Image 1: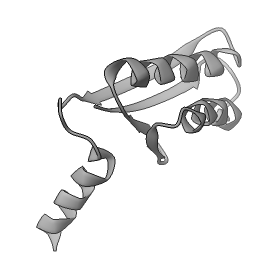
Image 2: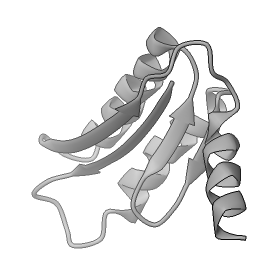
Image 3: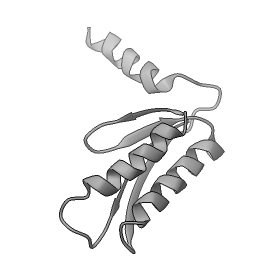
Image 4: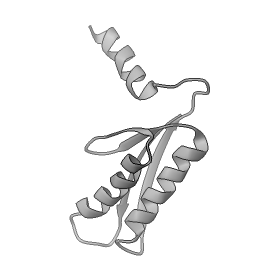
Length: 96
């Protein structure tokens, strides 16, 4: 399962980088495969472990303010692993 999510505090200052860094730190310390880009962090693993990471990342951001925005998109494909890279590799093969 892949879950791409974006979490940030609402009602704080214009910059949310410190809060987002706390969330990304949680993801990276989880040991799950992950990738962060300018808009989302994607995590790969089993349902319960991925959702636990999203929960703890959201809690880390909540420490920066009383309101949090969470956007989540999931690709649930049982029996598949390595899709964090696999999906991109298949796309690139079509573009070659």
